Amino acid sequence: MCTNGTAITACTSNDNCCPTGCQGDDMMLANYDLDCASCDWTAGVFPFNHQASSIGDMTFDAQCDLYYATDADNVFKVNRNTAAPQLLSSFSGNVRGIVYHPGTNLIYVTNVAKIFSMTKGGGNVTQLPSSNTASYLNGMTVAPPGWGTHGGKLIAARSNGDVVAFDTSTGQPTVVGSIGGSQLSDVEFDGNTLYV
Image (cartoon, rainbow, N blue to C red; front, side, top):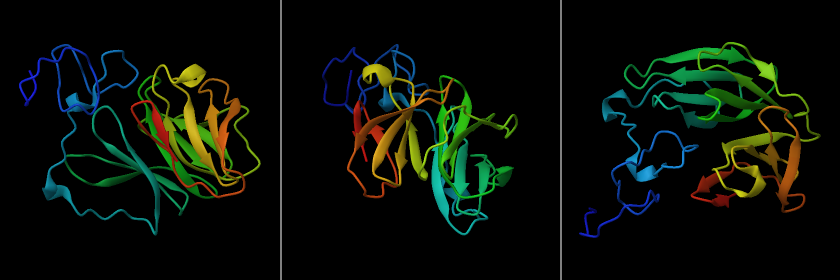
């Protein structure tokens, strides 16, 4: 039952209901409902010293820990209980995009014109094959299941105006949209709607 008294049984994000059997921690599962999300940071941990000149992007994992990428070439993890930043990895060149992928349980980052994966502890940093593009990659997100043929793929904004889907296994890029020549800084989904 929702706050307005309506009986809801479908797992539907943004309807202010969390029906029995729905969950909000893994968007790759069929019973995902953002209204059931359980991440909770207390205000007492803010502000925290982010140890960077500029934050390019940020993401949360399934345990509600925060990860952020910096223009100073670093990736940090922040524990939600301690708010202490931990350096996970350093790159050569700007790291502008970062996203946690619940389907692979890995962190993905955009580093200049390439995508790298790493464990949540910062280990096994690996460039996705075929992910090297001709222009900067910026913000990145994960496409929800059922988003055409690109469900579960990484979706990144490119500095040449393209929105690109990347396969997490092969790194194969596919342009899914373009506004031609304009720099795009970030992408984000609300349900199945992509905002650029």
